[in-house]
Amino acid sequence: MNAVVFVEGLSDQRALERLAARLGFDLDAAGVAIVEIGGATNIWRYLERYTTQHPDVRVGGLCDANQEHSFRRALVRFGFGQALSREDLAAHGFFVCDADLEDELIRSVGVERVLEIIEIEGELPAFRTYQKQPAHSSRPLDDQVHGFMWNRKQRYATLLVDALDLDRVPRPLADVLASARA
Image (tube, rainbow, N blue to C red; front, side, top):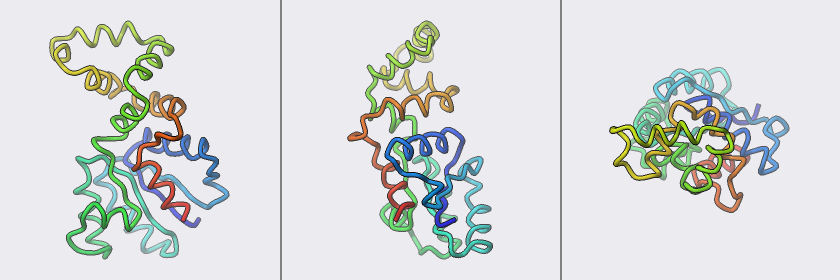
């Protein structure tokens, strides 16, 4: 193995693996593994294992904006630098999604196209019911779509990557794959 990319959850792993395939990047041939770590706070354990047991393997990662601090603290602890900025994280192969993977994909694919995908999946009636709930009815449409997908993100992550125009790949996703490939 040449490189490993740590991701918070299964939806992130599936999305990056699908995106790599769509981009013609053979992860196996390149010796790159996308490793789901079961939540951002577990980054410590994975960094410890890979920096001690596999010191020749390049490490990188992708996290949500609200978990950036977990990744940053772990990288500082493992000697990647002090007071790391987002640019410093990127220089070490770690990238941040604003606000999260789903948000990045929804913005890149476009809300109207995402609604078409929801309809194709037969979930438009469920989405319309979700929209009518008092907690969601006054929220902007993109927030409603994001909230609806929250419990469905493993399913929709790959569907959104499949719908993605490859000229509009979210920067954190493109950058983490490029860093792993380098």
